[in-house]
Image 1: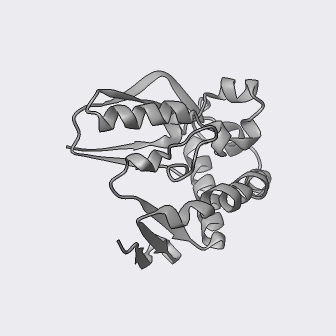
Image 2: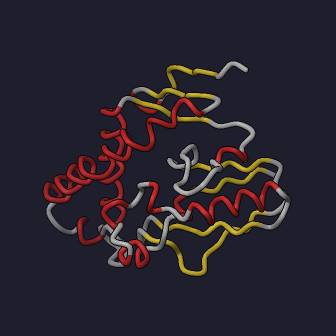
Length: 192
């Protein structure tokens, strides 16, 4: 059996991020409960039932009481920007539990373009759902919303990419480089 989980579920809930004054750094290493993620991968590696919290992009938060239970898998794919990072106050990387790791790479201008396209798509999806996190942006001026998204890129995503994500690239077993239209144009396999 093959299963996929994302590390988004290991973000602290928004209430906790607000309490820690980290909402502006959501996605940075300190916004993740890395101890919980490490316990999760340790349980999986040891064949124990493991609970992965669920994250909702509609509410932009952890789903209270929502879990995916991973039990007796043959292959577990863990997707997330923080899987190759060394957690603070830890001696273990999450990737120390991995048999194989892949870093999906692209030029920054493409990553920014895809981020803005995705944000625009989220606004389209949210415009008829008042319960969606993006609804207030979707029903207002699209120009103002896109300006806010570009600001988030500059203040959050760009520094996170440069300071915490890119430096982990060389820890991967395989670097998969993507170009326009998300097409893979190069593969770099670590020689053992």
